[in-house]
Amino acid sequence: MKAIDLVEVQKHYGAVRALDGISAGFETGTLTHVAGPNGAGKSTLLRVIAGLTRPTRGRVAVLGVDLFRSLHAGERGRVGYLGADAGLYGELTLRENLQFCTRLHGVDKSRVDAVLDRLDLAEMSARPVSTLSLGFRRRAGLARLLVSDPELWLLDEPWNGLDADASASLASELRAHGEAGRTALVAAHVVGEYAGLFDRGVALHDGRLEEV
Amino acid sequence: MNAGPRVAAAVLGKDLRLDLRSKDRLGHMAVFSALVVVLLSISLPPAKRAATLWIPALMWVVFLFTSLLGLSRSFLAETAGGALATLSGAPCDRGWIFLGKAGANFVALLGVEIWTAVLFSVFLGVDWSRAVGPALGVALLGAAGLASVGTLLSALSATARFREFLLPVLLFPLILPVLVFASQATADALAEGAVRGLHWGALALYAWVFTLAGYFVFDHVLED
Image (spheres, rainbow over the protein chains, first blue to last red):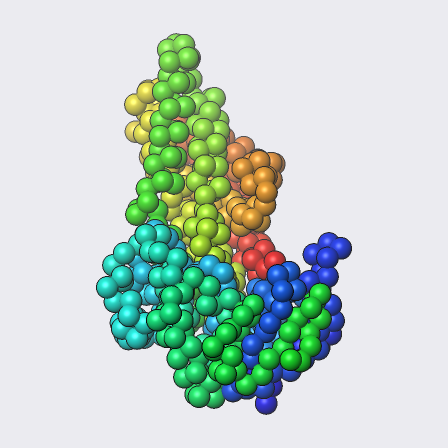
């Protein structure tokens, strides 16, 4: 079964064609690496799939539904997007941010402590997110994703700013996600030693998708 | 609890917490309105201060400019850390996010309205004793109208290049009915201790229409 089904998806920003007629399917339970140079359209692709950016043309089905339709709004929680920013509030502590996510997604608050322990962030939980270093903010972003427990992960350059331990921890979370039969698309210039994690590789060039 | 009301309540609680935590937004609005009222009290001839016809209009104009400061910062926390994507991923119609944000703005603006009324009382000698009930009702409906349209326009202009310019340009023409009816209703409340039904109805209708409009279009506002 396809977790993501893209049919002739286009996204234009004025004269710029960020996505230029992409048709592709991504099977449930696969981890896919999306490669491509700067400006190739990787972030746009992930945002379109996440339901954050409406495509100019084409059809996007995610987990069997069209996330842009109000009728399927309840399904948005099944998709987790982690972009360049952590998606957290700088003035709130890490714990408050994660508790806010549990309320948004209607999940048990006990997940907060479990995730903080899992990512070694318990000591940082009482600090406002704005006071965390870039690396810890990236890890906090991953914690946000894990707290809401989405079926589909869309990660944009997730290894940026992470040290070796945190990189390994992210790889381990990705592996566990895949082993649980869940799906992830990871956009990254380079994945280096973690290339083996992925079941499939695709590359974006000038808004067009190619198999690697 | 259903996902929509739960998300709206979570957003409302989060925004109020942010307001109380940073104090930037509320503090700036409180200081700005205090400065304007003090300047008015110095510049207005004492003999004219007792007139109730134009004091309400002046108060609502002060309040409108003050609320602009707060509304322009309404989505700052979301755009600064990429949290707009977090909110957009909530498992409900995005109109509920609008209701949560508008609710938090309503509380902040109502607080600023009351603060401004107190300032007018202290520095310009406005006597609210006969008008507390009706004036509070007008303040509630005025804040609701301003919060609904202000939240919507604040979201629209949040990522624009000229955000500080765009928001007042969009807001002022749209908020004119609230300004007119709230000023007249406040004048009536001060003079007669009562407000005309037409004014109640107009203020309530405005708040209702823009709250509904915000609920239904917010999905498109949040999308790129």
